Amino acid sequence: MTETELKNRLTASVDEIEAAPDVLDRVRQGGSRRLRRRRLTTLAVTTLAVMAVGGATLSGPAIYHQLTEPPVAGVPVKNDPYGFLMKGPTRGDLAGDQDYLDQALAAWQKSHRDSANRDRGIFDRMQGEPRVYWAGKTPGGRVAIIGQYSDLRDHDNIQLDREGVHTLVGFVADGTNGKPTVVADSYPAPGVSLITGFVTRNTLVVLDIGKKVGWSPAREYDLENGGSGRKYTSVQFKDGVGVVELPTDTDPKKLALHTLPAKGSSDLSVAGAGAELQGDSTPDDRLWSDLNGDGNWPMSPGAEQLASTARDTFGNAVGAVSDPDLYSAAHSIWIGYGVTADGSAVYLGEQQLDTDPTRVYAVLQPKNGKARVISGGEPKRGAALPVQIRLPGNQGWSVAAKDATLSYRYGEGQWSTTSKNALLIPHGEDVEVKVETPAQTETVNITPS
Amino acid sequence: MARGEDFDEFVRGSATRLLRTAVLLTGDRAAAEDLVQEMFERVYVKWRRIHGSPEPYARKTLANLSANRWRSRSRKPEVALADHHDQGAPDGSDEYAVRDGLLTALQELPPRQRAVIVLRFYEDMTEAQTAEALNCSLGTVKSQTSRGLDRLRLITEPALLEGLR
Image (cartoon, chains in turn brown, red):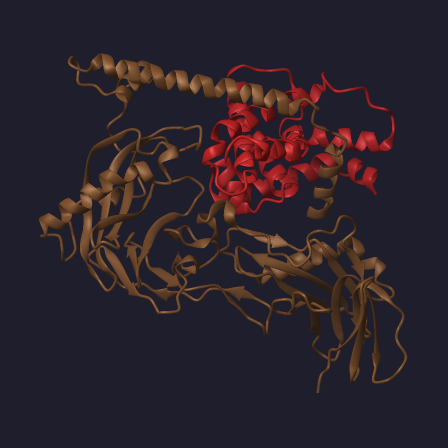
């Protein structure tokens, strides 16, 4: 059973199930009830807090927690990923600048209200006092890294499989007003890479976690061999952190960290970088995703036999040479497949990694031997023939244009028989492709001199 | 976002698809409807704080609620899912038998394996997205996927395989 078959079967298993027509009404009623309950709870907590004024010194939330939850544990868990931040004296060349340390700590304590992690409840049960792990001057200005214990609990906005007292981290840099400002905070979220770096201006600051770590400015695509990946440069750590001055053309959102030697997906990341941390904003940039029907596109006579395995063959071959360190891959919804003059199978499709632009690929599978991935680079959006990939070894071209009727000819010769959406063209000189749509007919020379 | 037309549109546009996911996760139409109802109510409460597409948040909430349901079940046993006590009688067609068979096979997987299979292969989520939705590591997703597929193959083949060919 292939993965495609499994998907088809899962889909078929539930394709007759429809939501009840009154689902919206019931959801609105239930949702309104929940909102009212929340407001009443908030009111009750506030009332308790008011009652405490002049008597006990407990705050509203503290009373609420005492009434509803067992006493908090004060002992940090074992294997606390950021636990090292709470050990030893403050490091860095600003460690003796108490005025700066005080400003950084004050910035940390004021920052929780505006943090993206506030809704996850990570600041609800802070423990003890925060401390500065490292403070120093960098090419990007003054930097402080702060740690503080917090008793993390299961929360309706995030579930934790590691409840208990953990260390939170705060990354502080000089803001636009020159004052220490929290740039990012984090906690050890299960299933998500550990944030150990952040960027301030032109500088990447990386926490030393006791392992060799490399940094990479961006994913690279190999047009020759169809692959993609990253090259990592070792971070030099000193006194607990590594400071990297970034090239001026670096996009901080594309930065990545990886333990060295880099293999597979990374367990480390840079605050605010990578598709993983950009959450819901990952765009679907695929060339063709609005197919509303069959995306199986035979490209040559005799291609039908390839239909059932085309998607898996294409996906496996392209996946094998793709960057393994990615958050999400958008796979091709359409697939072209055909047979070349020497009997090799050809598959055509696209793949988008994270927020990078989508790219088109051909996979050439000889009768005997290993499949080869040929990159067509970024498709020419808006062109009459957006996908044009020349196959190696004089095997011709594979081209595609959704909803178009395609044919080819050599020089001034006869037009070939037509093919819908995608076409495999045998090797030849002076090749023209006719692209016919209901709106227009255009001829494209794919072998310009 | 206010809870106006946008929210209504989101519910109308996603209710059927998310219900189908919930049926695969639970194997039980009634339980799936309860899950989807609770999920939408939570989305309703959080609506103003959801930036961007609400879809990923909804899917994650559904997966989490489903996980919580398993935890409850481990304390308080429910009627076995494979009993199909609340499903209509099969109509006798081969197609129906195959559908029924796959749902049954899916419910024979341990809950985590089932969720990983549904999210990865029905919802088309990446391994990283699945790990985040289920609050587990990438390594767990990889191993659960592999084990789940192996078990599903053992359970479904050859009878189910033949049924769909």
